[in-house]
Amino acid sequence: MKRIPEIVSPAGNPEKLRFAVDYGADAVYFGGEMLNLRENADNFTSEKVAEAVELCRSRGVRSIFLLNSFLHERDIDAAREYVRSMAKIPFDAVMVSDPGMIAVVRESGMESEIHLSTQMSTLNHLAIEFWRTQGVTRIVLAREVTLDEIRMIRAHTDADIEVFIHGALCVAYSGRCLLSRYMSGRDANKGNCAQPCRWNYRLVEEKRPGEYFEVFENEHGTEILSSKDLCLLPQLPEYVKAGVNAFKIEGRMKSIYYVANVTRVYKAALQTIQSGGDFAALLPSYREELDLVSHRPFTEDLFNEFENKFEPIPYVTKATYFGYVDSSESDTLRNVKVGNPFRPGDELEAIFPPADGKIVHDKVRALEIFENGSVTDMARPDRIVQVRFDIPLADGAILRKRSNP
Image (cartoon, rainbow, N blue to C red; front, side, top):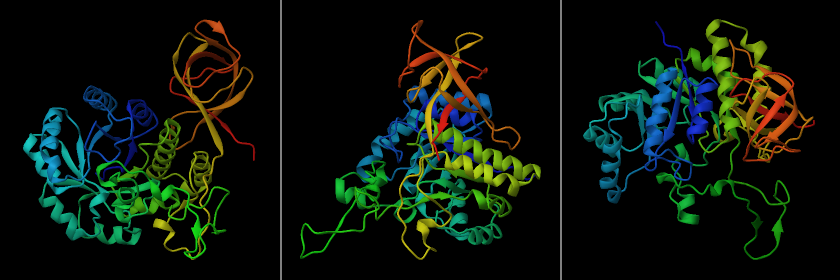
């Protein structure tokens, strides 16, 4: 029986992991305190790693632990010690980029599957078969691989293949960038990218210092190195037909709202495809939902390489995240972890996990707000308050408000 493709979601911290699981992820990827490519994320302590794996197992979700930084010679002893400390945790898989890390994982006695990161730029079936001889069970293809090339690869191999389906694109080939290290001393290939491709720049002619040419996208300058965001949703049925085993969402540094909403959209879309539903009819609603998460303009081409002109790349923000229902205080009161302030009487929108290919949301109104047992005039950020809504809300419901058109 052919296995249904997985949705593989990012988990930058335990809270985001829980929302990825609740909102439809089949697998989650996350990192510990070292050796992963998001050094500045709110990564998992050893204790939290074990708890995350236990949660995933209880929910039937696969756990993928990231060991995908590149090792310098001076890193090897520390890597061996760290991997040995994690060897008994029953991850479903570990993700690596460096062949040396494969050796470190094997030495540790770790029994998890080994997945190969997109950082290794795997572009063809010969490379895939080589990595399989090294014990790798799944290959995350280079983002530069086209849909037609995936079809050709699948004709030559039955290996598990995973592709990035949504999220930010790196300016460098398969993410192997030297710009950050050159400009800030922070090594992207060890998880410490300063993201200089997203900084603001101005153009000045060599012999005219101080005279700035108007190439800016806004008053702050132009982000001339930055790419649009990847969104392959319209082509999802074709990727399924091509034999992709897993679809990966970028974004360990993104918000809870991003993780939950993007996960639920792709999960719903995949449910529709697998059930033989009318994907084309539902596609506009799926795209509308993705548009309600802050993003750069979407592209289906890596670095817009098939487009013939430069366009500005400002962020698109069409909704504001207000928080989520953390738990139930009583039959009528809900504990809400607040992201942005709201007041009694404010009309919000609650979103929920996908249901049989449908994207579910409801309008809700905050009737009363309490903090520490006392009535308050505002739900303030980074606090947990009690809110009485005009309709019952389940734990995990996320609150947002669409921007005025």
